[in-house]
Length: 154
Image (cartoon, rainbow, N blue to C red):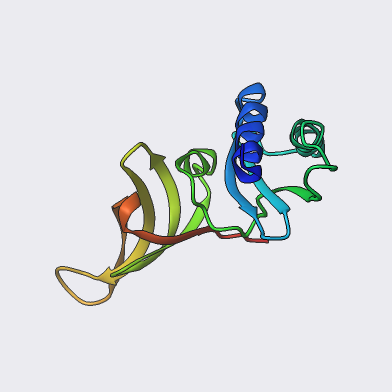
């Protein structure tokens, strides 16, 4: 079995043991540096990273392949890439960039096909002068999303 395939198999087995965790990214360089980025439905704690690291490291032979291993959680500003990340962030403010628009709004729904963003905007009144606050809503398909990040407000 090729080294990269073996690492992928071990990682899949480790994630089966912890169903609340899911893979965001797996990179294996030519020098056998393994970089795993995880996220979880309830977040990722240090013990989760340790468990996944051990599941991989203890089943690889350093005599056969010299490698380094880094298991991390997705950071707060890491772009969302997995549908489960959208579900995890329901109710939070996201900045979503598509080909035609950029929306910064509250994520109110996430299903298998699209996300729903809602926000309030000031627009000119239909009758008379001045502006009024209107509720806006956008359904954005996952295939349209170029980048989505959680907006952190203090």
